[in-house]
Image 1 (cartoon, rainbow over the protein chains, first blue to last red):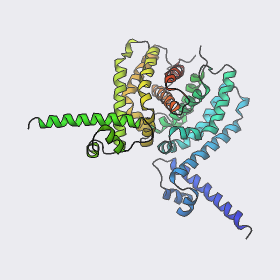
Image 2 (cartoon, chains in turn blue, red; image 1 turned 60 degrees about the horizontal axis):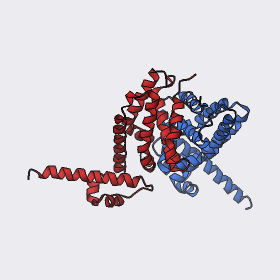
Image 3 (tube, rainbow over the protein chains, first blue to last red; image 1 turned 180 degrees about the horizontal axis):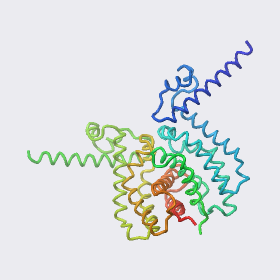
Image 4 (spheres, rainbow over the protein chains, first blue to last red; image 1 turned 90 degrees about the vertical axis):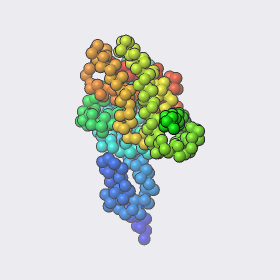
Length: 193
Length: 193
């Protein structure tokens, strides 16, 4: 009897992980998956699915939050402080892109459900890494200091996500994205002459 | 009897203009207006409203199309070919912004209803002006030639619309937007050293 609660909690955690994993895969494939599709792919019943996520919107938000947490962890692991700011930004873009690339279609679903500011707020844990690199680069004089930091972060975010939209539209190949995003962002941040 | 059809057509055109004008104002104010609100503001009945626009989504698309047509006309009137490419781009940004600024909230509604590619496609008439200026600047060597033109257009589009999102979020004042967008875009387009 005393083990019942921990076991139930472990079951719940396993179910949540299976649901998030299935949802992430299905949202990533395009046209909005139904809750039934997600329950089936996760190997759980509808009752279990709805017990953890009240709606497809709630599940979509959880998928985004978990991807951002993954990005945050991956960027922390890069230990960007040891690199010069330009190289740090290049690595940051590559790593962020490799995760965003798996969520390009999910972004379309997210834009339909969340307003741009809600979606941006969810990126705050990733933004902190960008802010830190930009701030360090500004202090070192390798990034421009004539525009607000907030705005430069917003511009980086816009350009990286524009690449996701361009890949979705078939105008850029996914593998080529970091190679166009990095020189665009670095130019945008260059000190004014 | 022979004048009945032209009069009916004139009435229809007047109604459509009143509906579009009311819809543009209401969509611009924030949380999604209902079709009833729009009919009331336009001074037409629901039957008339639905006769012209089958759904709020159809009406929203018409508002966007008309704003893009207005932008196209305003950019054509600037006669950008007579200006050097950098100055032409500055004027293009100012003029586009002055229209986008009135549609910042409408953009949120549009993102909820249309996928990013559908929304981008609607901007094609405005993009032709951007492409023309960028192409001329690349040939003159004042804009970079190392990245695809399509991608540079997409990046300009992303940065201008990021400013709209930043103003909506209260991080930039509307009047300051062209002053941050122009130097960001021009830096992004600068030839690589």
